[in-house]
Image (cartoon, rainbow, N blue to C red; front, side):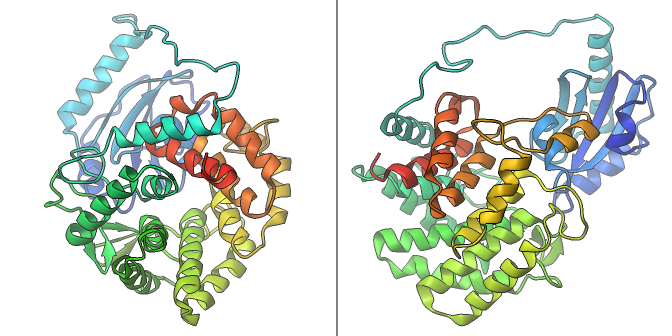
Length: 420
């Protein structure tokens, strides 16, 4: 395969585009790239290589957000693909199936409508919304080993933080403690590995994701505040010390793989690091955490770009995490004005600007995670009306998103309504 840039593929006339999504920290991506180099260029196909960290706008639209992955898309939809490592023979078979479909050799199956599809005419009440999201999250909990799902096994810090906010039900706290204890015992080594390949936590990945470790610091601090167990505080502090040691130049990379930095410095990642270190200072009083957090805040406000190495696009998710970080310092109101002028859609916020969507030939979406994180920052700044608008919008649509995305909305609802 000979790859081109996404921008070059938009108007090249080929009816099918094969998009190879990869990251620098993906453990199978190098092997997948070698396999793809052995596959011939087929007429009628464009081949695009996308670093998913650099282009989350394309990844969220066209990939399963598991890497490596191949997505085959037409002008209107994704028609097929693969994820995880696949052989060159499997790639050819997938291309053949897509070509056959395009030429009329098959048909797209449209699922039957269900009651949950579409939009409810009235929003779900805060109390019911929290209860439903809680139930959705707990349905994926592994009651035998802790964590969520089976293989791979995840620990999902944002889900744990949401569950800790729920009052009046002791079970979510037990889920949190059981999961944290299992993860600390099995996946912690200065920082946390991203997941386990097996249900019993015994085969951990080689990758430590920076943003995930920052979120785990926030989760451990919440756990300490909830349980008063200093065990969680100790691991939060040690993870913070490890995290500060991963900095490359001015910023933090996406991941550490086998002790080596991987991936570009991203606004989302570095905003989360800044927020986590700020919270560590509030619990410990250690000035080194505060100083590093303030240094990041000063830099990030002047680098409004997704990829901090250049003046590229700024996505709503970048703006959301930066606002949530700065709001903890009672800063960031100018970012709200930017969000309203460039991303606001009358009720919730679009994930990209209109200009970016036009240039890249993509639509604009209102995504639950982007909006929920932004809403959490708005609440901290006292802009509750805007945050309530986000909740109202997604309370009619939350079931269209995965449970771990719903958890961010659940946390926002809890911030707004307390014991809702």
